Every structure is written in structure tokens, then in C-alpha cells.
Amino acid sequence: SVRRLINADEKLVPNSKSIMKELEDFYTTLYKNRESRDCDRRFQDFLNGDDIPKLGDDQKNLCEGFLSNNECFNALSKFPNGKTPGN
Image (cartoon, rainbow, N blue to C red; front, side):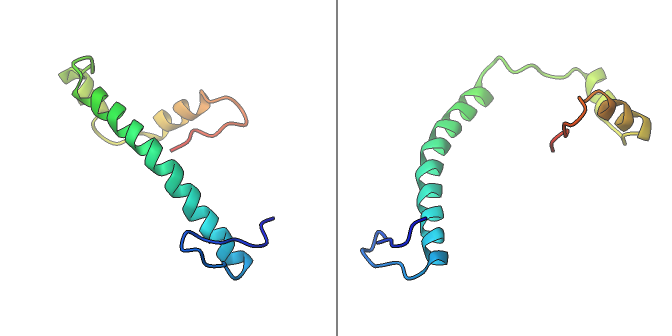
């Protein structure tokens, strides 16, 4: 565990809760900046590309409306045991 920490303002961080917050902020900023620049560029390249497949009218209509209990059950039944479907 980190017992003492001097922050970017060169001040001693007083307690463990504050130390954890400083560390979280530091690493969030460190990785967010690098990843978001790369991700944003790749995302924009993908969206502006001509390779994105488009749904036809029949496919669009098939996606409209409410899901039935049967559709949900059938989709969830296809997942392996012990796994969650995610969002």
C-alpha cells in the first residue's frame, strides 16, 4: 500500500482515502488521454469510410417493433452456460 504521496502540486497527501483518489485521478487521466485520441481517430475513420454495410428496407422493418418473450428466450438460450449476454 502507498503510505505517503506527494501530488502534482508538491503537497503531501494527508490520508489513505485521499491517496487513493489521487492515484485514481492520475491513472484515469494518463490512460484516458492516450486511449481516447487513438479511439476517436479510429472511430472517425470507420464512420467516414465507405465500407460500412447498410441495412436494406426489409432488414430495417424486421428490426422494428417489440421483442416477444419467445425471441428473448431463444436468443438467451444460445449463450453458453455460466456466461452473461452483456449490455
